Length: 347
Ligand code: SAH
Image (cartoon, rainbow, N blue to C red; front, top):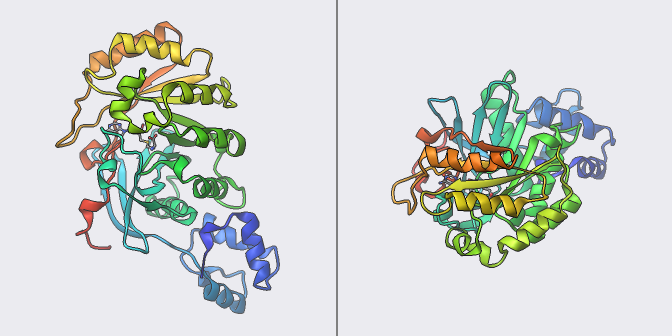
């Protein structure tokens, strides 16, 4: 059985031709899958009954089961999905005034093990397939309704996207193909903990989408304490990769920086950050730390975050403080989990 949402448009064309169907059927099928978001081949009414039967004998459409939806006081919606092997992942729908964003997961758990991140606590289980990534979009779009179109996708959920490069790349192809989800490449952001070979590969193979890098510190000494992968890819190597990356003022790299009280939030840190990013077209996203019971860190006070931001502004660096959305339902950055929800029943 082929999971049909693992196929990009070219592969879908090959697939239908191998079944003995005409090549143009791929376009029709893609329309049904990605524009109308049907759940079965039987709904594809402009395709003959016998072709529909053939398709359903050889391919499957949905790969996720929706388990639970929670809605925050601020309108953010968190989705818990079950995969075919029983593993569970989460996605977050974030409505904004003029657009809607979906935050997708790329792995079950995460191998990166950042010390301040709750997702890390579940360990790492496996990579998601392209179909499992794309299906998060389809299910959420079905749930929120067509008048709330998801225009932006951020690869900022569970997992490290650049450690699942091939499947993430395929999912991006499906999301941006005009025959498929047809999203604008500029509205897709891939966030990485700083996997240098992955950034270099992105520069070659996926540089139309936006790159975000979770820097979080300005010295290797501090960064090693909070991001263990810094031992493998230290700050200097990450910055060198960003210098090689084909960014410009229109397509800037986003530097993410979680603000941890007394750890990385001093004015000296801000000044060091200015030096590090000199000459690289970036914007900085300061992320207030989302605390949770048992966390080893505390959030920086708001005034300290603003002080830090002011230093960046003084050097003409675009710096924003990220809104913490969906905190009351644990949907904010770094709060997505799988394991503790095993008892929840399927809808
Ligand atoms: N693995 C990728 C994708 C995760 S994106 C990456 O590291 O970039 C999620 C962002 O939220 C990352 O910048 C991550 O470091 C940050 N984050 C993790 N835990 C957090 C927490 N408790 N509060 C605020 N931000 C957190």
